Image (tube, rainbow, N blue to C red; front, side, top):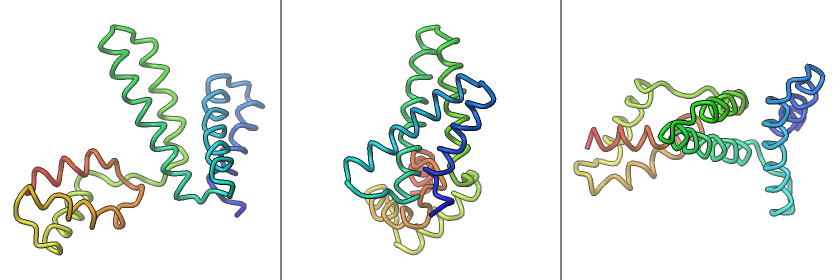
Length: 148
């Protein structure tokens, strides 16, 4: 698996080190560390799907930190978190637009015959396999709520 996400991150670390880009190097090393930690915990090589989940979790943490820093008036720290988000997003598959998500959500609602907010679980379950790492599930959830 020479084109695995982990391999791409390793190559990006080397490239960032050659460029002497400290911020990018430290962010990528942190991501690589998380990926390796997961492999050690599982005692097996992780898949690209697992890598995507790990990177999405890291991005979510940074978005939450960014919000807290902005609320506290620490824009320089919020900017640092934002830079890390942008670096990590380079390794994720192309994210779906809100319009594309809306089309998929409406399709899933008609497939599951959901009619009320209580059916949200059924719809989200059907969407997980269709979207699989290509969209922020928070946005997906919001669109499902709007359409039920």
